[in-house]
Amino acid sequence: MKQTVTRRTVIGLSGAAIVSSLAGCLGGSGSDGERVEIESGTRIVLDGYTTHWEGIEPDELAGEENPTLVLTDGESYEMEWINADGFGHDLQIWDGDENLVDDRSTDEIDSEDEGATLEFTADDRMETYVCTLHQQRQRGSIEVE
Image (cartoon, rainbow, N blue to C red; front, top):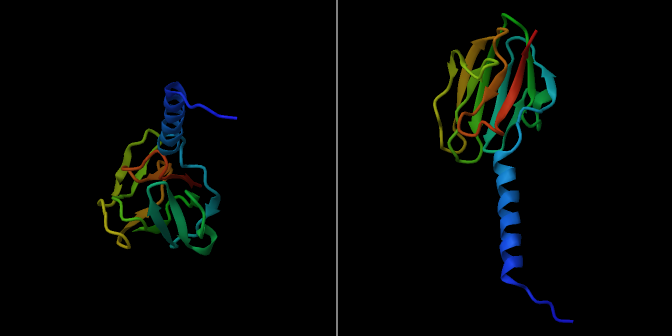
């Protein structure tokens, strides 16, 4: 049995492939990671990918994508991120209106295996940590208790 492929079929399949590809790049909020309580003074380390943040340290974060960080109000933390894919990344901490909280941000870094560290005191305005270059998927929630 001979199958014929029409121009209409090719165009339809091409359109479906494009829509599927864009859905993966543009859709969805990345802030749906595992909720992890972080002790005061703990060094938080994340790998930065265009698709997500991946937890490295402490052990409770290891392998978690866009983990929700549960912090204690008024306590100090150190957050380090490492560029894991060679694309440009930065890190900012935002409030609920997606405004930068007290200049808590790092510079953009586009070299693989390089990174930056952000030292801060947790407060209840903090709700999201995000890479502003990939903010649809490379973001995680912050809960301050």
